Image (cartoon, rainbow, N blue to C red; front, top):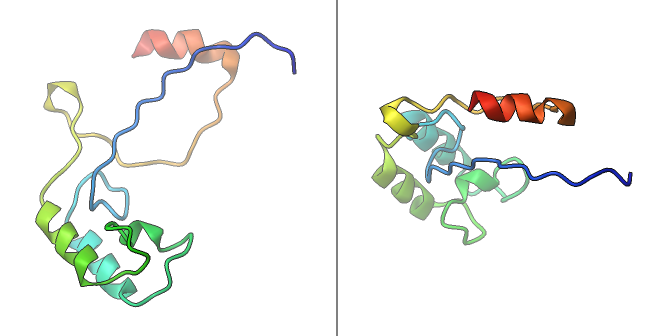
Length: 101
């Protein structure tokens, strides 16, 4: 709309095998992928195809099992909070939000 462009820093943390977005790889991720074996890879199942070969199979389960026990941590060793719904942030609040980080 002709406004002044702003720079925004968006941290991204990826945890291979964390299918359900809980911040850790565990039996829930393995079980969810096992339940999807043979299912078509689409917008609802693509996270289970972690070897990205176009099918959900034992290769995906094996990779998730090999990552079981891993979790995301923040600086200082604090656990990363689970994923939440995206939030719309008013651009006017960005300086305030950045100061809090």
